[in-house]
Structure formats: structure tokens, C-alpha cells
Image (cartoon, rainbow, N blue to C red; front, top):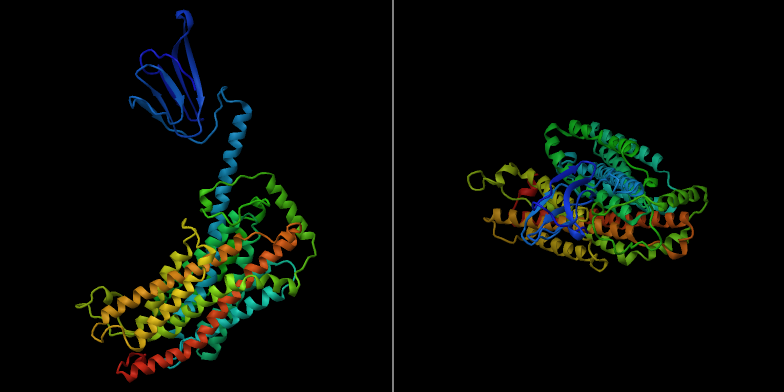
Amino acid sequence: MMHGALTGGLPNLLKVFPQGCFSFTHIIQGQRGRTMVVTHTIPYISTGVLSHSESDEIEFSPLVTTSDDSALRFPIQRTTCEEEDMSDGESEGLLQKSKLQAIQRKLLWKLGLSFFLFGVITNVLFVIVLSAAQDLLPPSTPKGIITFCNITPVLLVKFGWPYLLKGRIRYTQRLLACCMLSFFGMIIVATSERLLIRLIGVSFAAFASGLNELTFLQLSTTYTSPLVGGHSVMYFASGTGAAGLVGAMLWWELRNLGVRVGVGLSSVLPFIIPLTYFFLLPPSSAFPHSSPSSPYEDYTSSPLESTLTLDSDAKSYVEDLGIRNRSGVSLTLSDKWRIMKSSIVKYMLPAFGVYLFEYTINQGVAPTLIYPVPTPEEHPILSIFINSIRDYYPLWQLVYQIPVFFSRSSISFGIPPLPSRLLPLPAIIQCLLFVILTFESAVGIYNESASAASIVTVFLLITIEGICGGLAYVNVFYHINQERPNPLSMHDPERAAQEKEFKIGSIGFADSLGILFASLLAVPTELKLCKVQINRGKMFCKSL
């Protein structure tokens, strides 16, 4: 802090330098009446104020409060100053820090975008096939068979790969194989007219989708910093949520082109994954790894609000990678059972419950939530979206996917994750929604003439369903990614890495098992609800 008497009330000269300094000239009265003209050059780092008061004392410091509110503000940039008041060491250090922070922000942005695109493409074909169920199947075929063919290969992947695979994961080979399998699966769906062949094509694409999801969740664990690993999981979850929205809306537009053209156009989407992997995704060695005392469990803020700096940890991480590559460690089945056993109640049961009720609603109950087509005169807004009774099913899928996107993106939007003890809550709410929507389909909450009220009520209930489903997904995988490594494995980077890869990969088995059970329940549920509606004189589901 500098003090001095100021003649004239303001500095004689104030100059703002683009290099990050300001200079001024003023007159200081010293002892014995001597005066001195002094020019000062002051480096700045953050927003500051040059101020003066009635007593003509001048102070130079950031954000000074003045007695008379007289202040001269100047723009401050985070930069360095080349003036001699700042030492060469300070200038060089500040410049280096600024460059490193800029590099890290760019790397985080590329990492988030890469995993977002991975999430979108991984799930978008799955959603397109589900949304196109009415167009792919004959009218008399239950829509749940599409879910069954979609989820059975995924279940085999998520059960087989983590438990049977030994050693390191070959990410490049996996992703290229999945890309080609997805492409050929969708081409088979688009070009074949036979139901059985189409279902085989659906199974090929689903197999690739399941293996992609497993691979990218495991890939996120290679970024050993909890901040960076959490960042990748958050944006992957956000991408999978966006896939639901993109897939439902895409099929809403493509369905008018027919199955051959619409599904054929969507078959090129998987090629985005290898392009992103090779040309956009930053390598894990570009980020520092966490120290043993890193707050895995305490981190809740958005990664973009924090600043990463490269330090000696980055070098240590590269060395750890070298140890991994030279190691021949491989988890045994007993090791994997020990890891999985600790996750059954905490993570697997909540994920299983959410997807069991969610997909039973979407594939078993939603196809029977059909009402009279609203007329423009009585319902001008509803009539924009519903022009025939066949529009209800894809509309419910779209209504479901919108909140899924926002809820799966909740942590990346800066909303704190659910506490671990609340992870079962979305499954409980989904169960209640299943009961209410089943009652609406079979009996009706309102009388037959109040179709608009029924449509609005179903709209709200399916919105809540999407919110719960999205929250369950992102929070389960986020909490797994942020868990501390096993203390017994901390001395062995290869073992610790393989344990984390296996743990996050094994959880996917639970949600896929829930979807498989839902597909088995959805077929008799849809048939039974349709029969109940016909018995009470509501014939819409029979005319589909």
C-alpha cells in the first residue's frame, strides 16, 4: 500500500498498459517541505480501483472503498507486466501459470465435448429403434419384442465383458469393431422386410451400443484425477440423455421417409465415434492425476469452475502409465466377485429398480395410453402434436426423453449430485408412477369425455418418470467414478486401474437386467391393458 499527498486531487497522468500494468505520476511531499515527482508503474492481476479521498491521501490497492465514492476504474486482465517493478521471475511464473490454465481449460472443453458425443452416438440408435417400434413391427406384434431384442445383447455384453475379460482393455480395437457392427446392424434393419431379419439387425446394433457404453464408462476411469474423471462421466451421461432427445426427434422427422430411408440415413451416425476418439479426445496423460489425499468423496462443484494446473503430478502419472503397460496384473474371478459384492445394494439394486419400472411403463403401458384425436377447434395446442392415434406413442417417447436429457445433465449444469443414501429414491418414485399410469390405462383417472385432462396428466407423469430415470443414471455412475481406490491396491497402479474399470463396468449389468425384465413384463402388460380397454368399450388400441 502506498500513501502520499496529491496536488490537484487527481493524478497528473494515468496510463493503462495492455501488458498488465498501469502507471501514474504524482507529487509527494516529504520531510522539511521537500517535494518529489514520482512515477509509479503498478502491475495488476485482477479488477482493481485507483481511488482518492477528500484528504488527498491516495491509496493503490484492488477494490478499495473510498469515503466520497470518487474512484477511477480501469480494466484489469489476468496477464503479466514487462515493467521493471515486477521481477523477471514473477513475470515468467505468472505467464506460465496463465498459459497452463488456458491449456487445461481447452483440454477440459475437448474432453467434455468428446464424451458428450460418445454418449449421444452410443444411445441414439437404441432410441431410434425404440421410437420406430410401431413402424418396424406389424400392428399385432407387441412392441415389447423390440425392447427384448434391444436389451438382450446389451445384457450379454455387460455381463460377459467385465467378468470374462482379463488384463488391459484395448479401447481402439473395441471402438472400431463397434462402429462397423452398428453400421451393418442398421443397414440390415433398413433393407429387410422380414421381421426376423430386422430383429437380428436390431440385435447387432444393440450389441454394439452396449459395448460402446461399457467401453466409455471404463475409459473415463483412465483419467485418474477425480475432477477430470467426474467431468468425463458427467458429460457422457449428458450425451446419453441428449441421445434420447435427438433420437426421438430425429425419428419424428425421418418416419415420414419410411423405414428404408429413415433407418438407412441413421446408419452413418456411428462413424462419429472413431472420428471423435482419434481427432478430438485428449489423452489421459494430458491431465494430472490425483494424490492419495485427493477428496474423492467431497468434490461436488462443476469441473469448469475449478482450475487445473500441470505440476509434478503429471509427470508421476505418465510414469504410472509406464508401470501399467509393463505390468502383467490380471483380476481373478474371486477379485471381481469381491468388488461386485460391495456394489449390489448400494448401486445395483437402485439401478435395477429404476429401469425395471421405467421400461415397463415405456414399452408396456405407454402404447395403451391412447385417446381421441384432439380437434383444432377444441384443443388448438394438442392438435399441433397429435394428428392421428398413431402419434401418441412417439409423442410419449419424446416427452420422456426431454427430461431425461436435462436430468442426466444435472451435475454438468452445476447441480450437486444426490447423496449416496438417496440413490434408491428414483426407483421408489418410478414404482408409484407405474401404478398410477397402469390405473389410468385400465380404468381412467377421469371420465371418458375429459380426454384433454387425461393427456395433460399423462404428460406430467411421464415427465417425472424421465427426470427420475436420468437422475438415477448420472448419479450412480458419478458416485462410482468418484470412489477412492481400494487402499490395498494403491501401491499397484495396474491393479487399482483394473479394479476401477471393472467396478464401473459391472454396474451396467444391473440396469440392463432391469430393462430385460421390463421387456418380458411389457408384452403381457400391453396385451392385458388393451384387452381391459376393449372390455370397457375403448377400442383405440385394437385399431392400431
